[in-house]
Length: 620
Figure 1: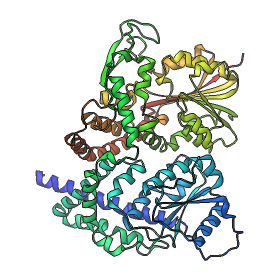
Figure 2: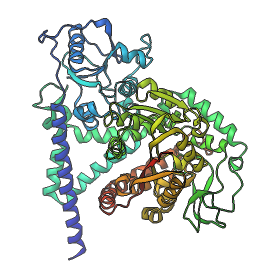
Figure 3: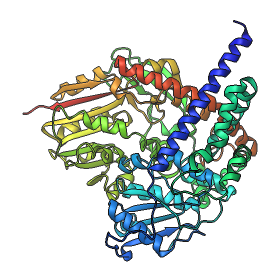
Figure 4: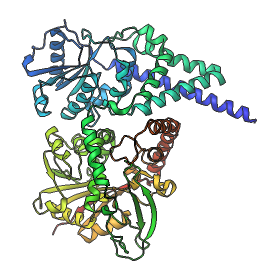
């Protein structure tokens, strides 16, 4: 077979895959659209009219809702048991409607307590209870669509299984503002530059297929071009303004929109004053250098005290791009891997800052909110052995696990412990019953014997002294109680294959990575019986190849606008970052496919990038 024949076959397969993906996306959009209820402002009043003083209507600028629409939305909320209703204008433009349907699955997101809130960004009806618990100020209306998009994400957290969506035929909205598109994507927690680069790559792929494989290329192009009309044309409820015009000009609009978004500077973020304050604080802190953030290097293993550990890898901070270099060393005797020299407490504070909260809070919440299946699998692990009644989740962060685990154990009391302020926000949301902020060993005496279940999910590797954390668990657990731990598996083959770009190394945050046999021995020595160990079932999807591409792209072109950046944020550096992200798009696609295959293999062979262990504290 000649090179031209091989190239033609590859193009044919790519074009066929494009047709399949576009077809599947069209069917999915139609299914999701059909799941959206349509309000009937003049409909039946069989259900008593709820008192409107119990509800708050929040609208973006230029949006108007008549009283009949508000009452219809309130009736719908009372009928469905909702605390928040996102009102989707029937006249919403076609691309905005399609974009929403890509992000929102109304049926799944209603029951998925951790799913991030998504909405049209025009109007919300909020119950008094949710409005009060979320601490909203009725005198401070949203200033833009982006504000309302951020608000629906917040409110979904306060009504995790009581948020719904409905099409409102009489809701009037202003025309979309293309200049605000990048800001609105950021408000949804999405990266504008990467998405625009992906759109440009998709358009280029369609052109290549059309030229090289006309039959399949024409099918893919036609399906893309006509998608708005196919999805929205004969639909019940939405009547997008200018649907025919939007369909006819779709490729041109997509091209100009992507180029405009790429050209939009990141400086249109709403908290410019806060960014300057952060930048000044980081500049002052870095003036003294980073050496003070590290302890002296230790000559032996912190787990078994064997001498002369070997260097496993050296890496910069590929997660945030903060200054500093970090070394992981491996014990030649027990295989324990640890940061050496390790960070001081001040160093940990510096490198954790703006990761889970502050600047990185939205991104972290977006990632954590997409792990509902993993959270439920962790909770289900206890089912053959016990029925938990009082559960303490250590290192709970914003308590996403506890929020999801309530669907598995609805009668269990879930409490959370963490160093960050987010644990108190989790209590206000109702995701946990009681919040404890502080170090687990420091609080162990106060909590002694209170819990029949303690969990540590991807927590122990972050701690300075894992043994002290296990001793604290012994104190807190009642006799016969269960300890559930999940950790990265340092024996994973992907760790050697990907080197510093293996995401679970997670430098500089991970202090210790211990093989499962080491942890089992430590627990047995403390009076625990090991009940179950899972490897393949604990594998973290997209944690290997997709994570590696993200780390590599971020390492090649760190965010020049980050407040800790030591190099000025010039237009050239911003352009270089955009170019790297654009070139990474096909790599992300390939990584997704590899990770999907990797997950299947991990499940089949019981060997992945993480492991999960359940142990029982014996009586006496």
